[in-house]
Amino acid sequence: MNICLRSRTDGWYVVTNGSIFLFYCSLFSSLYIACQSREGDLQDFFRHANQPWPPSLSQHDKLRHGNKADFVPCLKGSMEASADSPPVDVKIFDGTVVVQMLHPKTASTFKDYIQTVFLPYAQSQSQSTQRIDFIWDTYKPDSLKADTREKRGSGARRRVPPTVKIPSN
Image (cartoon, rainbow, N blue to C red; front, side):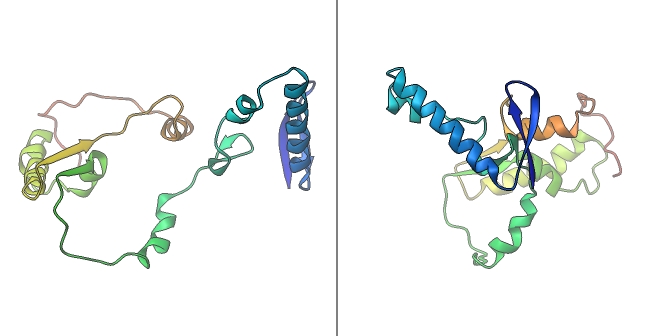
């Protein structure tokens, strides 16, 4: 296994066969000794992260990416299916998922879709609760979603008026 690490002098160098642990141990030891010799506060030293992403989410200073669908087989066995839902005060929906889930059926424009598909669904969901919220994706600069979107590339953004016809696909 080859792992690339940054070097102060020559850009990049390769660490092999588990010596990355020795590298981090050596780095940590040097920082710890420097903190002690400069009369630094050890509580403050251990309070700060030494890498940009949590180790559980990163690999080699890059965010690790995966597929959420990979968790479905693991979760299926641990859940019981139930037709009844407990009484709740608020329901929160992922707006993008709801739009993907609700097919346009006979709606020909986005206005028709809102009036004949989306709003009736929202109203049916509001029958058993006091409030419903629809959450839409936002891409904060230092988030996993923003990083994924940047790797994927960005398409053209368009504002769609209500009178535009819904694409057939």
